[in-house]
Image (cartoon, rainbow, N blue to C red; front, side):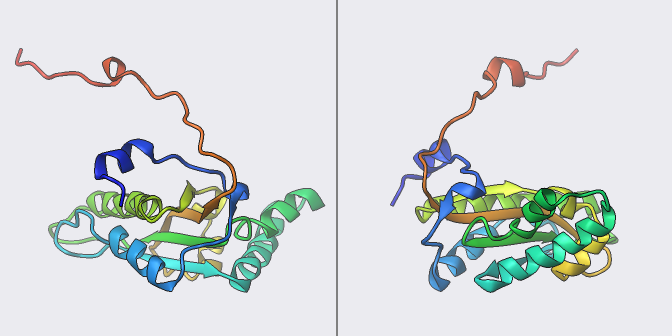
Length: 190
């Protein structure tokens, strides 16, 4: 098992087209989703949920999303529509993280949304911890109500992440990270 610090320092995204089989099996997926659900959750509201796409469901979702894309973009050509059709079929497993944030007497919706984002990041870390690779994307489907209905979202819910998971077919490549001196400031009293 990977040491937690090494795990966090070595996680890299691999683009969905470079994620192949095998995908997590049922037990591994359950473990990944359990890890994803262990996040800060002020008020214990569980303000997120997961939608899993495997097998033929990936292609069926892509077909439905391509039809919606064509409605929104009548000028779309065959290449663009083909890209939309294959959107969920590039990796062997896709998990959509959905925010269910709603008005609450004590817990701001913003905190609930952050909890959903933390869940998405734990999902990615969980996949990495089990030896898989992942890519977190959003895209237009995260912002279109019609796409949300296709995916099964309820009114008021929103897509936080579309996480593609599989086995990397290429080595992960790091990207430049900002120097800590550029992003960290220590507060001092005036």
